[in-house]
Length: 212
Image 1 (spheres, rainbow, N blue to C red):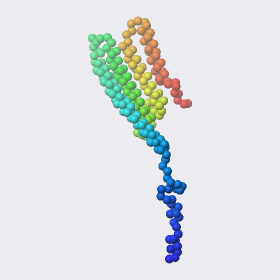
Image 2 (spheres, helix red, strand yellow; image 1 turned 120 degrees about the vertical axis):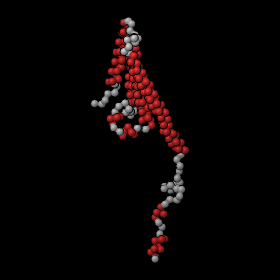
Image 3 (cartoon, rainbow, N blue to C red; image 1 turned 90 degrees about the horizontal axis):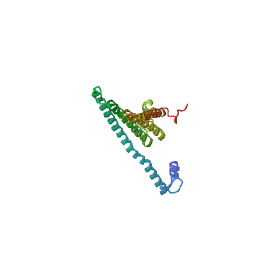
Image 4 (spheres, rainbow, N blue to C red; image 1 turned 120 degrees about the horizontal axis):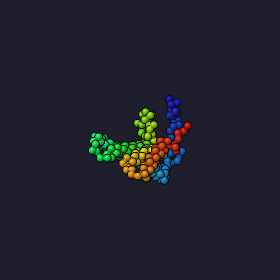
């Protein structure tokens, strides 16, 4: 009985070590961070969340991709329907060139849509969040134009597609270009040479050689 009474009178070490309420473990009062630090934290949080506004160009570029694909399909479909009149001997001269021009216009619209699609995917992955579905899927699916990890890579892919679109547009103009004299023929050949040079530069891309 006396031993239990002595144990009850002894102070509990855990209770003795507990600091008073409202004090920090070091013995001093708990201090809130300064106003400047709190304002800085709130402002940086606001800046980080402001990047989500980039969802607007992503949505608009994807919607524009759908529009250009539909327009390109309509243009090519109209040209295919016009082929039924091409076999008629009474068709005016240059009709076939206009039909081919419609097909080329559809291809040009497809290329513009692809450029908008690349822009939308690139902005989303660079500013908002990586696309988990793309990273968890087949790695071969990300080895194409949609594999974007930096702003320079996005710019490079957009330039490639846009240059090809300009080449297609120039080819469409050349289909209906009238050649009446030697100067026009020389300019036509020069345009063909420039198109070939542009295609060579886009295909080889000398500024970005893969590491050996």
